[in-house]
Figure 1: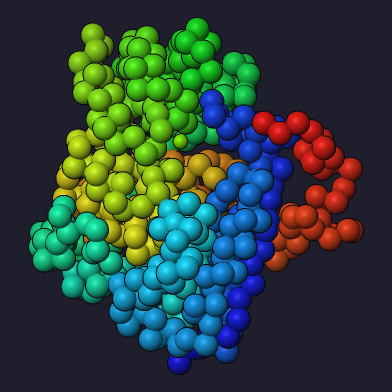
Figure 2: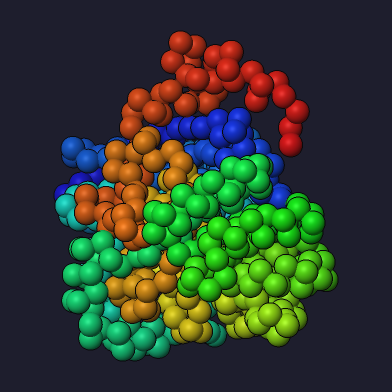
Length: 451
Ligand SMILES: [Mg+2]
């Protein structure tokens, strides 16, 4: 038996705003950050979970983690893992904390860190990666991980079990493919940040083509003329007819009519989808954009969203409204593994492929497990997964891509355990003599204008 005895939160920030890594039409200069939760136990194991943010406000998520984590202190891990759906319901049911959600915003970002730390701990004690634990569950065990409140109008537990049973034949073969790192094809965003120059964009795209990538995503929304120039450069680098797929991402900058009009002007570059065309809360707006772009003179442009969708209820409605071509759940913004499993099942029911959001520190480490679970257990179909080649060196078991596929994680846990030295070096506000944030180099960020 393993008992959780205490917790630590850490505010860890990487100064990515200095070189505009991660820049897009809405987020000009983010500092990729992790609001960290470590669950200590009376055993040799500790559970590591984090939520991704882009800098300021990370301390607010840490404060919320410190409110939620005491709910699991002095609990036996086996008791918490015996009925995950019940445990998850317990963690969202502190009525006073629920008031500042419910199940959305800062309190839900914090829940994601705590729940994911529990899964990491559980996986470490079982000596398996998270994806394999789920792959070895029966359909009934899988469904017991989920709190079905608020989604039974779209999917009942009985239906979910039937859906999982349908794809059980072939599961062992898919596990073998996962073991050979052929389960999750990767795509890259590393070339397409909005703050990169056109020369840098071209060079990075050509390099990505050589590395075997087939999917490429560019940020848009900074102005039609410059976007047309950048997309032309991109299409020249990846071709129109070589099987390479282009995707574009507006990070919520448009109103619904603006999104439709703007994308009609980019249609000739044949993007597969426009990601986050408008507010993530606008379910009917996404449906309207998808309908309007279904028949451009150059073919359909799909609609994708999810990285800022707050919970399974919004995803349910997006799916019910026929608003999505692709669903991009985030591993932290929703309340951790259990809610992601619910969302994977909803997507399966509505026949929409999952492409989890991975553009952030620690996200590829998480999502490689989630996409593997989707392929092996839930959909039985390969999708693609975003890979950004930044900051992996700070993790003990970093995500990596080989021959265009994610290398399936085999180490026990949920892969987001950060190196202790990295945590100290990038702690915010940090200790004098230890943290980068106390050095002269940090002053342009700390004293510069807020954008
Ligand atoms: Mg995005």
